[in-house]
Image (cartoon, rainbow, N blue to C red; front, side, top):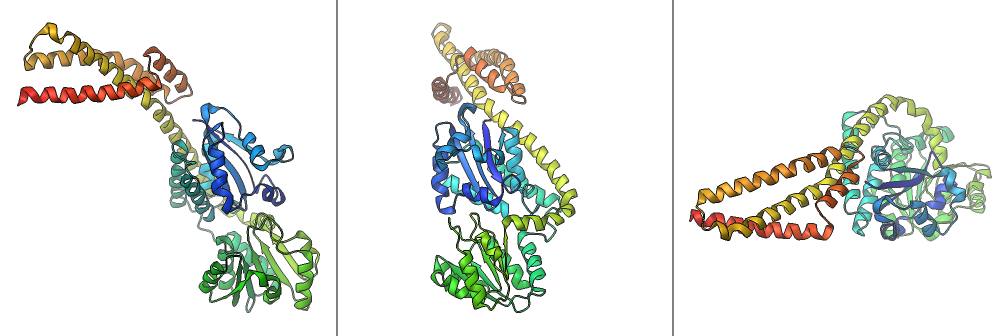
Length: 444
């Protein structure tokens, strides 16, 4: 294994740091391609959400550091970000990915959205050829682990979510949501979920603005709402009591002057902004305008913290599942590492066995079927005895950290190099076909 993971999330970095590193969905395929093509990387995957930006790689020969890629990709000095970065290798990287997919590392423990986001990141990386071998196995297994956690624990049973917390905050501001108007800026899944909760708690009307107007129309239709051209956003926003924004814009969509204009148009009736975008859509300066209440993703995290204790016991059970799965996955990967060497050794010795039989066949003269079987049994028994110790050693080594050393030693002892392994496999196939033809002869 050569897994390496580096990133930031909601616990290590504030939103103003995360938004500097966030990669928008439109740029993710090219970013994954560049990561996988980096000189030290064999495979690569990037997860970029409002709460985390993580780079996961299968490194070539265990060499290199993903910091080098980050410096090149962002064209920045990483020094200001070092205190916010976390880094994991090998089993710890596996454990982290399993925990992320299982929603144990989420702002709201047990929320289901993160699994979908990891699956989307996986699909994007696969589509550009950035994930192929061991990372493919790792991500596929992480989805199975997440399913186990959700099936065998009650970690997702509580209704706590970013969306439900948004509802609670809105109720504190307005007292009641009955008759309130909701405005979605951006057509993302999280904002849609928040709108669904708000509408279920009494909000009556919904407006949707999105840079792609057709998407706004589609989302508005789900709520019997009204789609609005993005160019009319500010002038139409005064109708909204609650604004949920998540656009993916690299710059603020709402600035202080917009907030002052909206308050004048609304005659100082309060407005509630839920900014779940990273980078942020709403300038923090808007909070200084009387009547405006702006909450970003980190503010929602603080509101969520009071609910965490309810899930602590179930989270502990989930952690036990993850730890067991890490051990199983580690053992499986180690076993896979030795399989090619075992197969190559078997093919190599089988090729030698057949070559020696063919070499002395002329001196032995014509043999009966029983004699053929006796020679076959004798030589095969000798080869099996020779193979027993190295194969047993390889299988035992697969379960600990010395597997790479043992594999290399066996390959050198038996002269099993990559090019030769292919020739042995090809020769072995030819020999086996020849044996089958010979065995057909005496029986016909």
